[in-house]
Image (cartoon, rainbow, N blue to C red; front, top):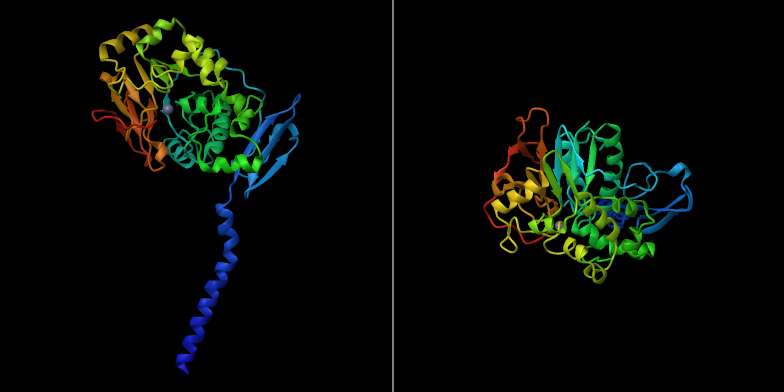
Amino acid sequence: MKKKGWLVLALAVQLGLGLSWLFDWPLQLKQTLVQDGPYVFFKHGQDISAMWVCDGEKEQLQQAHNKMLAPRCGYDKPLQIGDRTEPLSQVKFTAPKLAALSDIHGQFSLLQDLLRQHGIIDREQNWAFGDGHLVIAGDVMDRGPGVTEILWFLYQLEQQAKTAGGQLHVLLGNHETMVLRGDLRYLHDKYRKVEQVLGSSYQHLYSADTVLGDWLRSRPVLVQVNDSVFVHAGLHPDYLALGLSMTEVNEHYRASLGLDKATVKQQPILEFLYGSLGPIWYRGYFRDKAAVGQAELGQLLQQLQAARVIVGHTSMDAIYSHQGGQVISLDSNIKKGASGELLLWQLPGMPDGEFMRGTLSGERLPLETYHKSADETD
Ligand code: ZN
């Protein structure tokens, strides 16, 4: 009888496990379904409309009251949508404290962890950096699955920073310019499904009539904060031959976003700005091709009235100093989703005037000089 009892128990356990699987499967299925949005469109006057993908299905809102959007799927905070964004004509800024990173490539939780560990945002993901400036040096889009969430998060963070007397600078990288002109080679598979469900190309979801498309089109390519020039990839000394101010470079980019390659090539200024020596692609601080030395770089910086250039785009395993401190590289390979760093300056408790790198575990370490050859990816 004892044996039979065990058998009954074993059967009951088997059945229980089977049943729990049966009851759990909707949850398991739900986790594999696409959640994304909102994609918000400006309509006539003050109206906006929005689309989401919830559990793999399209959801729509024809008109939002007072431009307030409650969360449904994707980005999980309520949004107050502003008017169309006026581009800032200001290009030089003074900041009492500074943080910077680049090449997030859709890694939303990693971005939040890094910013929270160093007090740039609080536990509710709100701006906690007071009058500090945070620079995101391009390439938020492509590769990873959290692009929509990151863009809305930054959209909100910019408003909060301004209210607190601080500033968020989101610079354009080559991947933003690629998406805006419909080059979708690096899109995460998730957004292919979003295109299908919403019946819309990804490019259209970031058209000039969308809130985020409009916001992206108002972003600069160059900013100077204190004595540092920030740019996604770098500035080759030939940049000076253009004879353009930083403001004019930003204006040229704004006017050209979305143009196809052939049109860009017909205009000499744009051909340089979008070329391999231009601000969103250049790698010559770290590579032999079109390399620039310390003396040349010194002259360039003198012309720019800056002490250093701070760039992303070329991936390394940490944030590093190069060229005798005239270059700092920010791209710490966040795109792989496993680690990343944040450049910090003048945060409470830091040595006066020294740049440091903040890690995911909250440590602050000195910048080291880079010696190995850089990764090939951007
Ligand atoms: Zn890049």
